[in-house]
Length: 447
Image 1 (cartoon, rainbow, N blue to C red):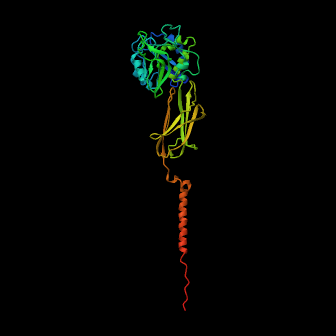
Image 2 (image 1 turned 90 degrees about the vertical axis):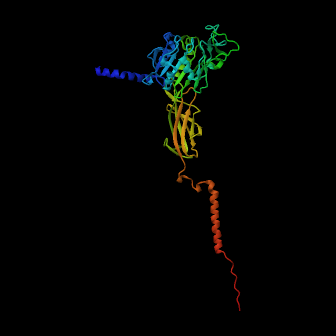
């Protein structure tokens, strides 16, 4: 090979490699994954978890939490597509680039964040602040989730802090682990509470008999635990309005090899479901196309309509399955036809697949009100990426030559008939008046 050819390969090699990795990525947002680890954490304890991520074509960059050169941005752009933050048990703080503000800026730029809280230590202040911004309230230091009715008798015969969870009752989001499973979820750690943020996505919660407390302190009957029952959440996330996602797992041990290799454990399937949703490999839908037109016509997306015209609105929506786009079928997709307030709120009807999209349509009559109107499709459901589309059109009034004539309006027939009757009566009266007169009296002859 000539030196020129070798130079071209050096120049184009890295861009081509990036394009190939992007094409193979199962995530819709990219394959570059940053994993922040502390040197005290043995990566081999989570080898199954990381190997599964590599099998899904993620390019993983393992970095230390105290790396001074670690940054989430390069020249104002995201350096990674996703971040897994494993809290170090030996550090008191994270680096300046892993504080709450940089993590929130990373999400604002479309990045996804997965936080794994260490089960043996409290959450660091920066992570606690980051979780508070998401309306997730992490527990106090050294707290444990215990369940005296559902625990692993071999692992925790006395403390009852290795909890056994049934996916059928504890999994709040069934889409994370599709399909029924008879396996169990092994969990050891603490739990957190959720606020009232409407963007929250609860995934896994404790059973009715579980509660969180500090083993170092005596729990009296009059004391209230930090959180208990089904209000104790173990895994929860949030989807920002730009579709960036963040998930907090209250215990990283749930994703360790020991938990995954436990008998009848569903932790591996749960870990895959959590990461697939966080990194936008599942729960992703998109709006393929939107058109509006006069009913029974072919001209699409006109800018002006007339009042009382019949308008047809069509939208195509697709869903990402991890390797391809398929039609997304639902019965709750709605359209709003608004000016200041919605004049119409109509449910779109799925009429069938159009390639890799599902076609939704509806036909309605424009209101008798001219002005600027907007077709507003706003589909936001928990666990799915948000779909929104706005298109503004003008609604004009009737032109002078577009009003119906009197003889075309059935309700005008009585009035037209009355006018005709009056005219005919007047003509008859005039004729009778003109041609009728006093009767002539014969003149008497005089002699």
